[in-house]
Image (cartoon, rainbow, N blue to C red; front, side, top):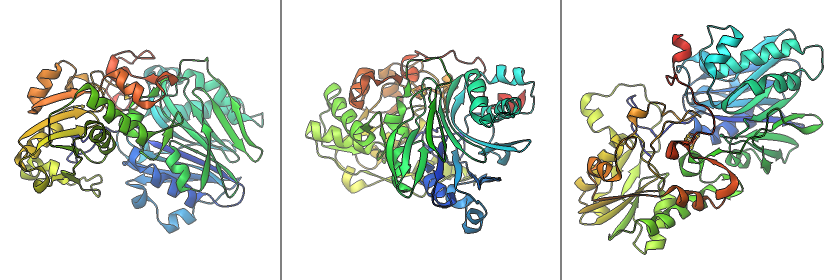
Length: 476
Ligand code: SF4
């Protein structure tokens, strides 16, 4: 899904962050959290941060940039302690600046608390009013502030953090998978729908890890234990994990786009391999929208498993026709107009000898705004393809997401008011076929597990905010 952002870079649809937490019984955790964040870099590239505790003091280090740009050995050496949390950010509320980088931190008397958030709240306006704060710039900041005040109210009890979360978390609405810590414990908390993922692992060296995706567990030497359930709060200290349930039970609704695009293919969710599910999407897509063509070409890299599935099921040979530049990170360098016109080649470039004279099935995982897809189709034609049959391994993206994907403005969505035929014409493809919602759910292999499909169906599991401007807290 190589959509074009308004900034000079080209990037896919962006998600609101990766989170990790670790409690080790044997070692300092700063390096472990660093490598865990490395595995979660795809979930947010704007800023990265780690907070650790040695039992007495919480230390936070965060900055703008990729994980490898933010941290070096001296920075990690300064993060002392055997427990901590980490965060990679892509903003869906608030600007990209140092203040909004996470973990967010508050000092309440002798208690130090830090918080990392993946998701997007839908009731920030009410929370800001209730707290009487006018200077919060993100939903995560409001959560940290509400939590700090609740801790202040519960300070007399040794379980201040748990009690404060039991009290304050039910006031938060929307999507939140959180990692939280004080000097002596880490906490993982998922909203009652479980929009964003969170899993629990046990460290081979002793201790526990919470992470957005199972791929991060593999990297830090942890065994997968289980997913944190929707609505569950897991508190981990020296005595191990304990579960609490602060919310009224709701139907689970994991973001279906975790399976389509967001999650790493080597992760598992609902017990199902993401890579396997994406291959199955391609297989079902080939049944729903067969094509008379010579080769199947993926839009790398997220389109690869679906293209493989399409090719295997259709019998049409799989071929690499596009190469992705893996080293395009965020760039703040403004390209010239000429470069902007050719900007897609920053990220993807064709292999003409594979495309020349071929009728191509071009497989992508999704189309959000369509501007980059149009350039892609044109680029494949210019490289010599005689026909371009576009196949998309998800349904038309028609409705904005309020739960952590940066698509709140419906007017920018190409499928919001266009038919499939109108989209095909706009993109310049010879044919266009989208996977159906039922086909996508079937492809996950866990169709009944509970998914959010709001951006595809318009069926929102929660009330949604009227103000969809991601900078509204900063402006108000
Ligand atoms: S609206 Fe779409 S992108 Fe947002 S959480 Fe639901 S399925 Fe995911």
